[in-house]
Amino acid sequence: MKTGTSAPDSALPAPGAHQPRFLVLGLLAITDGHDTVVLQPSRPASLLAALLLHPGAVVGSELLQRVVWGNRPPAGGRSALHTCVLRLRRLFAKYGIADHAIEAVPGGYRLYADAGTLDLLHFRELLARSYTADDPESALRLARAALALWGEPLLTNVHSDEIHRDLVPRLAEERLLAVERVFDGELRLGRHRELIPEAREAVRAHPGHEGLSALLVEALYRSGRRAEALAEYRRIHAHLTEELGVEPGPVLRDLQLAVLRGESPDGQHGAIATGAPAAALASGGRPLPLPVGSGGSGEPPPGLGRGSPSAPGALVLSSLVDAGLLQEDPSGRYRVHDLLRLFVQAAGASLPGAPAVPHDPTDLPPPAAGRPSP
Image (cartoon, rainbow, N blue to C red; front, side):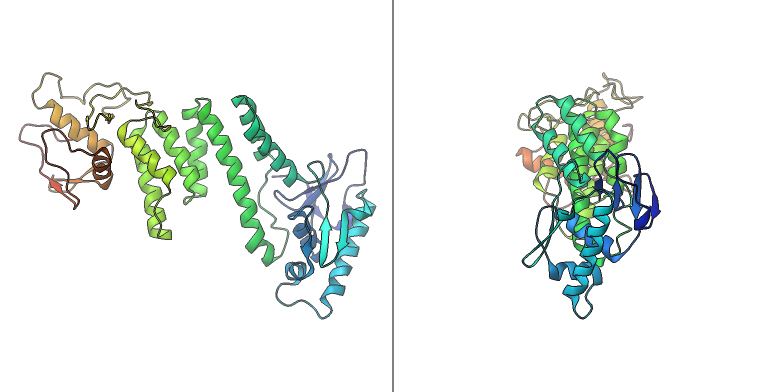
């Protein structure tokens, strides 16, 4: 959160050698580089926020009236709007901001700003440079610098339903783009484990955001936590279908298939999890690593020796339960999870020596006598 104390307009810092800057990525404020003063809620503050969120663009008078007065503008709304503009111009002149910063144009008003005078444009510039940087470290550093410009809460000192309904959500989406860029940069640099706590926190704050969930799934998978990656996919799938009535997008679906098949998220074969798989289901030439035991050592669970004739079947069953692909009911029977069915259908073949997994839900019998239950 940006520092500074709420104060009336008259308490703004006196102009100095530093160029005054507007801040909208948090509370609406003005800073001279040393002191930052958060503006008190007022009609001119609402007007200023609307102009700053459309830098360099003409904002129509009718929209500005709705921003300032809602759906009930006063009689002579254009004259009242002009009065608010005059108050802002006097404020700008007093603190070293040129009088022509707000320009009257046919149909409305326009405020010119650049990356040096508005934090929103500075943020966009840093993020754009992050996308064009050749060096991954530089790209990540730029993305984190862009994200560091944001504070909380967002424009809560601007009392305008119009802004909070139509403009603040778009602003918040821009921030999430920067979060995704940071997370993607961490993955590119191989910092999968370090990313997981930060990614989990972001997903908790935005449980329906597909991009953040996809990055968390990938971080978990690359860290050898395949069961958790599949669990996160099931969570976002349930959220989207139950809350919004939509299926996950192609990025998440492709990532889920890559995890199921043991492929790299970029489509190349081979599990990239750190734990070596102890068993694999070959289907159509596509490997399916099955995490077993604890710690991903590749050893079978306790009590399952490699020489035991019943070990392979029990190992596969245990691994499927651990991965969340089978569900055990109280009677000891196992129900095939939709994720396993989807994998088999995508692979185009059923398990060797076993009947094809049917489309309808199937119950599997409990393990044979003497075979350890998972």
